[in-house]
Amino acid sequence: LERYHQEAPNDGASISFEYFVPKTSQGISNLYDRMDRMYKLDPLFVDVTWNAGGSQSNFTTEMIHTAQNVIGVDTCMHLTCTGMPVEVVDQALEEAHKANCHNILALRGDPPRVVPGEEKPITHFRYAKDLIKHIRDKYGDYFDIGVAGYPEGHPEEPDADVLIEYLKEKVDAGASFVITQMFYDVDLFLNWVDRCRAAGIYVPIIPGIMPISGWASFNRRAKWCQVNVPPQFLAELEPISNDDAAVREKGSQLVANMCAKMIAHGISHLHFYTMNLERATIMVLEQLHMLDKNNEKRPSPLPWRQSLGKG
Ligand code: FAD
Image (cartoon, rainbow, N blue to C red; front, side):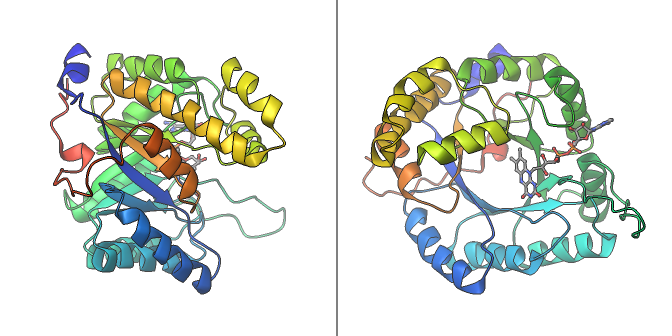
């Protein structure tokens, strides 16, 4: 554990951005402009979500192709497996392969609702680990595979320690990195990383950072993801809750402080849930003085290709 922390570079952190799939082609083309602008912020990679069940999967693969080959940034394609026929999964992997995307975030996705009297959902894949095994069987080491981690539990399993056992199974099945659910309590996250290491999970663990862009969305997402909001966040944000610009300003300071604390503890990569917006993420990076470098591109390997002391 000590070795892992010591080997992480302490001169700031690299970054990456998640985008979700817009509902329309027009939405996608607007997003490309934004992705292009945000490329100048020097992300090591960008990832694109997958709609569970595979609806609009062509949008995900198209965005991956454009980001990788037109914008020119490394990509990571999300892929869920529950309720998905194996042919759809294989088609998606083939598209990623053709696009020269080498990274898949392998997810189970939220199971489709079972409607009495209707056909039973397809159950080829039960858990994310089944998808990981499938990818490894078909593609060997071509893809680096990431998985989701939940420092504060999951709606189906509130016990974070039980989830660490399942996370270990995903790593043992072939995952090379973990990206976490959003959180606002850094101490809780760092303690969870320690527990993952103690459980034998030595792959890079990348914190998922959700910038604060307004009071309503901040509250909604924290409740939706069932994450602990430290009292300081509420004390600072609640009095200004009717002024979104002020919430964004104060929120970016709070999130930047979180990031600075993680960097000080040896976390070397920060993954931003952009929600397809740029301002809130940029404000956090400004607070961290991470945009002060004179636009120089850093030729860094992807976080899971760096030697982060695998224990
Ligand atoms: P799994 O790791 O398979 O776990 C799911 C649940 O199954 C666990 O909570 C546990 O209760 C149970 N379980 C797992 N293993 C076992 C076992 N061995 N025995 C018994 N029970 C077990 N969703 C999307 O639809 N599209 C996306 O693009 C997307 N991106 C995401 C990105 C990140 C970083 C994160 C954190 C989540 C993302 N999600 C996405 C949400 C995710 O699909 C849901 O949280 C889903 O419910 C769980 O997926 P998983 O891959 O974590 O599943």
